[in-house]
Length: 353
Image (cartoon, rainbow, N blue to C red; front, side, top):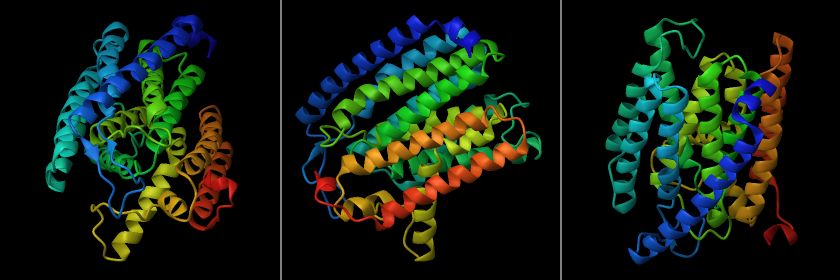
């Protein structure tokens, strides 16, 4: 940890994150005003968790910060990493597709095709020795599995952006989680480890600045232009963590998101409901429907995510299978407790404030 932190510099890391946070907050305010002037609003409907028209598309502010920062970081620390340059192109592609969808409507097939193209281009640029399952499958099978997992993560990230502050909080936690894990385990990773750490920190700080205006009651929503590219970026970071051998940490960090979205889709498929159609059947949405405030639900998930982060960090440092099993068991227990609370807890008078 000390080696990588010394290379980055504590003062630089603090100034870097504070500057990005403040810039994102300012740009989010500008973008919000623009969205209001253009009447680009998310109007409440029967599936909505909000009750007043709210600007959507605030994720543009996060991307305006992130895209040039990722380019600068990669150019300075790891310029031959073509996968990152391909990822930047993918971010732009997904942002364009998602912005068009925010303004009108694109078919599911067209959106999925865009997700698939963005993922496939990056996967072709990743070195052949970077494998999700560490060589237990042939390269072609490993890449197909990685692509499916990544596209699924992009979409579940979008599905889970349903109440104030939730997607932003999850993004901040994953970004900080990857940053701290890289500090702990990345001292031997050289320049690529530094680049990954700084990209993760930039992601957390930029999303944090947006989150100030997205916290309940939200004054702006991410929109698909925010949630889809953020799912793409966070998915890339988690997959790279897994390819570097820390697959359990990569699985534990987003464990609640993975469980809520996947179980909800499986349940809808079993009930023969259209799985790609917008709905309000996620566990966290049930909690809001029973009377919990957006802030209460998001803070509950945040507390669970902090515990999951602690287990992810621990799993990145253990060196035996017993430790891995204990970390995985702990993560499963935490997620089950979170899901049960979402499904059954009843609010008291204070919980609704």
